Length: 330
Image (cartoon, rainbow, N blue to C red; front, side, top):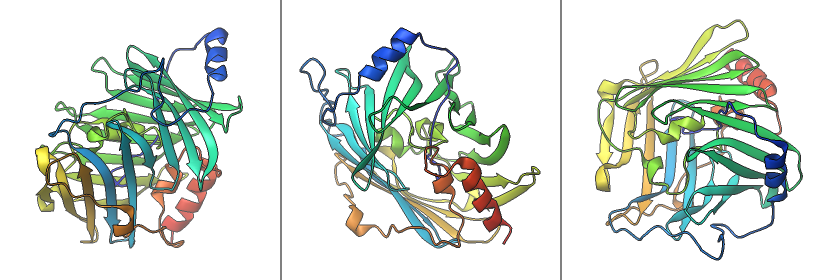
């Protein structure tokens, strides 16, 4: 709803600076390699566990605004090799010998846009270095975590946005807030009445949704029973896009306590919002492919939250937010 359940969607925080020497080493570490790249001749592999479901598709159908959007995942040796985002960019993944994210090469229509290098501390990604194509021009996205290892902030140095996260005692994401230029522009609130596992956790290799500005949403252990999206104008006035009623949520289970489909009802309009998932390596799995999903671009007259949740789009967040607010006022 990511973007929708935003599972997007996008970025993280860090509080520590790295030495010039470390930055130079990272900048020089940009050779072209294959997805799921080998390190020291070793290709990381996750065992082909017959019980290990792997999500191949997340489709979100919003009947209120009349659109489908979807994320797709493909795998090599049990790790995500390509992740196609809801806004069309393709993340081609590379890993170290331990199966940890090393790089992502970001493409649009086959053209390389960015090379993303992941910097770790205490086994967590504390910084993303976004290089324009293969140059040294970059944005630094930093990630901050609490004592439980939960992401609590993402921040972009070049694009001047940050996202804050708070959690329930059960580990579920309670709320996230996206700020641009110090002003809150959108928030998401969640409740948890069931304990179905978060399908994004089955996308092995992807540690969090770095492709979206609300990156922390993918990493929580369970899937929400409801979501509320709120936008804020220049004066701080709130506009609720949708508010889902957890009492009316209908669950359709898949294997291994993952949801196959979740049907939501909007309190404000009575409209339906449906999240559908497909998996592989999961027993009697539903291998939905791109050709069988009704994904299509959002109408120009509709609210397009996923677009501004792409923190590295050609248009700045400020420009995207201006367009969004104009739509909200109609």
